[in-house]
Length: 472
Image 1 (cartoon, rainbow, N blue to C red):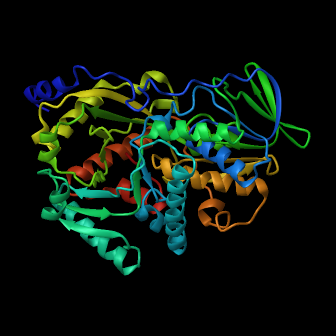
Image 2: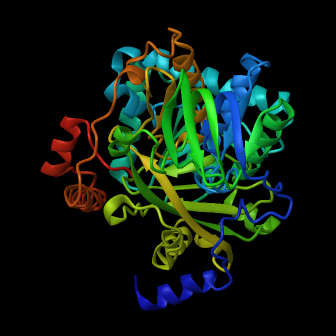
Image 3: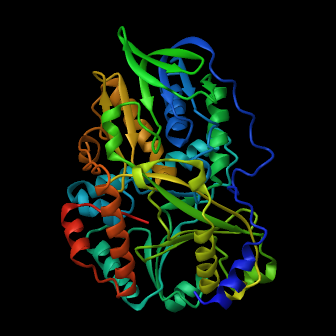
């Protein structure tokens, strides 16, 4: 990036606060009191993000008499659930292409379950009056290079051959720019029904309120320290007390799992985003975007972007930072060098918006696994269930994961628990320094592929054959 361009683009960051826009809200609910003393319950849910909240809510909906406790180490929604882009996708497999590559025999069932799951989220938003700016807008995947446009066309034709293109439309350059106008857009795939947009923090806070109304006892600022068998159930120790439960559901995702053998299956990847000031009517007119779809580009190092309810633009992605040793630390949430890079990319995409300022810049950790989509399991003779590894598409898929955990804890055979996706685990990540070295080589290779018309080198082709990779 030339110094003059850097000065011009980074000037837009001069007043950006290093806090997540979604969480910067004076109406956020007060935290529930920390657990002190001893409690007992039928089901203990560990983790106050989407995964835990959906588990607690659905558990009470399935059985209103079930005594449910949810504990959260900080505050509900403060981590990934309050920092993401708010793309609530039907896909359970981190996109159709990933699902088709891994579970071709089950892909139609996975697509059906994903569509049903998104419908159930929309129904829950209405049923519980969740004030979360839910919009069934759809999403457009855009090509910004000629080879990407050809790849999108080929992929759309394959989707049609396999009977998987329902609700999806291929857009040429004129058609995509009629929807959202950027000189960089050369083609697009428009998924009209498979994605909704939400205010992510408000979704978490709304789920919290719904859980409380149904009788879930929630304790915030209550980290779970240990998990051990206790009689016919389990005991979880906290700084000021203990919970004894018949069953335990773990929705801790990027944070160290209380079942130690699960920890090697996930690593933290730091993702970053910017939020603009509200656009004026003239600025909005210069871009179009009347239908408010979410967007993402087609590079390996991709961006995701969307309009908020108050007509700001969120612009995130591209960099995916893995800290050596897989540590999750607050200081990694802020990365000015990435913000500068993202600002330059934003104005390259939308030069007509030059002069717009960013008000917020932030980051956060995503839990990823080697197959890019969630995995599931049980421990302690079926008294503990877990789900993790959503890799950035957990806004919608965590509700499905909650149902899987509850099915597993009940010992039920359902259409969910019979899936290969549920029954099989991904490959674990190797220990350091091999994990960091492999990820660094993969990131370098992905950037090189983006710069060379998508051509994948020997390392990436080998990773493809093994079903491994690293996603931005």
